[in-house]
Length: 168
Image (tube, rainbow, N blue to C red; front, side, top):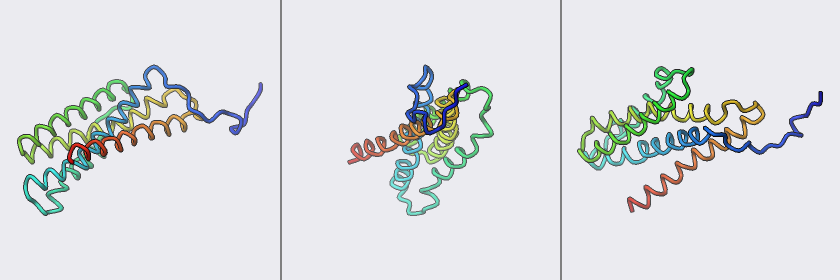
């Protein structure tokens, strides 16, 4: 049988498969939600309560980061579809809670929203990458992961730009 060296193989990623768009959506959503929580919510808390305390203003970030780090305890690696849907549900629900917290001025709701978004974000990025690279040969996984990261992080840049334009 013929063998090929790595240098002879094309380096472009394969076109996305049928379910790849779900992975890209999950990765992009995970970074959009984290951008909103990490960039928008601390400023909102500081403005709302007139607080100059770094601890109070960054409490939402600490809760978000703890939940995102702890998400490994919640999700099963064996049920990719179910856990990806659960992560997306947490992110969407958390954003709804965030809007309600901002509208009502409730710090408790802001903190709860940060936790719920964090549970979705941590898993959303990880599971989205699994969906995109699943079944690809090892030599292709790097190219697919690079495209995934580019699209996911690109969604963050767009979110920051849009929030900046909206907030004036």
